Length: 398
Ligand SMILES: *Cc1c(COP(=O)(O)O)cnc(C)c1O
Image 1 (cartoon, rainbow, N blue to C red):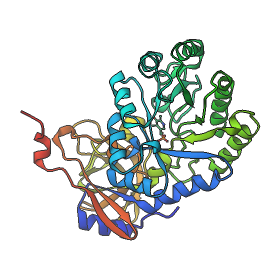
Image 2: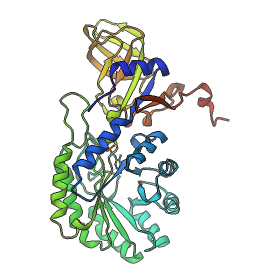
Image 3: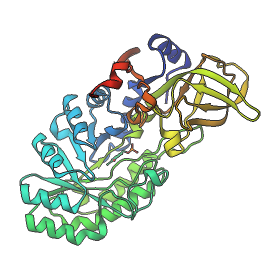
Image 4: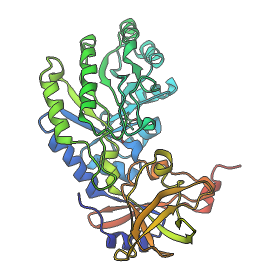
């Protein structure tokens, strides 16, 4: 997959300043094309899990390339509609939400996956058979890069445990609810295709209980490589396994297959650019202090995530060992003892794979400003979010 070059990124940093998030629209297009090409032989629909990156310009791009959208809050659903998605292309996979949000989702006319028996019951009482709906099930499968991003295991808060199927069936029967979709999402960073196959088996066992299904929703979580040699979900293999499973099932072969990729579509499209404030040599560590921190990119501190980093100001410099840290008053380490081209104060570093759960998880911690965002499209770099200014910190305060 082609990346923006160091020179392109350097020019963008010079034009817009740092810290800065940069996204490459062409990359998102290419990732979506990979999915649709691999799954061309199946009746598959993709919903971009937009919690990975919700800038309205990204949503508009996702819409333009023909992908649908999956939302994790009612506000994301409103953003999607604002971006121009028709309601039928918006899916709302909720969890732990007040029933009023589901009522609002119904009023918007979007697809809904309900994730608790409690809300399913309230839904049934109010809407009965009148509004087709999906249910999110918890398959009790352990999967995903680590426990924090694993959502389908038997202690996870997400979904209705499959072992409570009888209760679900009672609620559905009592209220004559039209269940149109069965959903699972087992986690993020899933490289093993067999996890999806296991999920399919769990759902296939349940299919006979629901006579009005139109889709099976396998969630997202496709793994992307964060460093050279890192594994990626084998999408063509996944497509083949999914096709085999669905084709051989008497009912499932007539159903749509839904996926909700977030990270897969946008992670590699994103770059975080930051400048070096301070070099600090100590007896055992060579610190590089940046003008960013976990307030802008929390993944390394929160998930122990690895992000490739390069010094684009000195790409031919001799390699040395550095510990890259942020400017937040907390332990704020991006990388420990990393080998990089010689770094000097005011150099610009780039973090790769910063498109998913980067800006989206940023905060104003330490009363620091959130960075600006730029979208590169058709060779042109466009500002899609202004950098915070001081007044933003006071907004809403009385
Ligand atoms: C977060 C989430 C996704 C996307 O996960 P990725 O790892 O970004 O692909 C998909 N579906 C649901 C319900 C989610 O919560």
